[in-house]
Length: 409
Image (cartoon, rainbow, N blue to C red; front, side, top):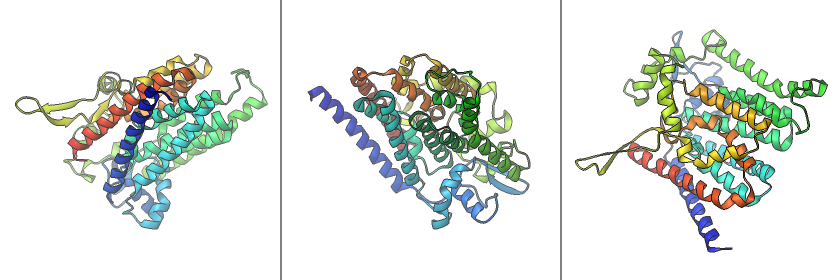
């Protein structure tokens, strides 16, 4: 083993240990009464959908009652823990770390399937875990938004694993249905997953009983998940398509909360989706890097950190290697899916605020890019990709440390 290889392994190992230390600190600092999914689960245990309080900002006031507006699947995950330990359950970060571990296992298997090379797969797994916003949402799993996004990533990863490694349309559909009940736009993965399930020699548009059966097996659980979500909305707000956002009430969480200063204002004055948000979201998605504010008479004192995050492509430029993958039908469908999800979020009222890493909404489509990173790389690329991944890990780690420090987190 050469000195260069030993040094690179040592640096990557040190970065991983630093991330693990941050994870441990997040576990130790978690407090009860911070994740509204505990309230959601507690309400279900009492046979109702409304809650008595609101731990997070995104709660709705409707018909004299308070509701958690988010999809229900993370509440299902929280349910057994709340049943055992009560509404003050304060170990959502360890539960998030469990999901983080499942992601590591699945992407190890996915990487081996696509590369058939252990060293390259190891680097791709480090990229997935520590060079994307995944680490950030894991350590912030004590709050409702991040917990939902982490488990959405778990189930999308499980769907990709089922399609690529297990070749099971039923399991692929099951997991993408569960992902939809965490992050609604996950349902847009279905065409891409269908293409992944096809053998290379199978025509895309052949209509026969095998095609119909495959499509029905893939769609069964997602259709059931959509029915569950529409019913859940109807039971809460009296309309299947009503998610509750128009009933958001800032007073449920306190008028002085920073989130309410512009996020709730956007929702109430402009709406959930609007062209008015495009420039802001596009700049942060593609152009803006990590930004630390300096103050004092000589601008030598760190005074703040931009909690709107940074471009995922500037933090982790290694993701652009996805374009080295073969431009076949899998790439075209995958790229189209990622572009559609990304395009919709550019018109959304929030870009992921608050976040001390790259844009966390990118996690909704990043699994697709990660698939193509693995498909486009060769074993001889391992060293260069490891260097780029180490850089991305270091930037992400710095953002977590500096952002958390300046925020008092």
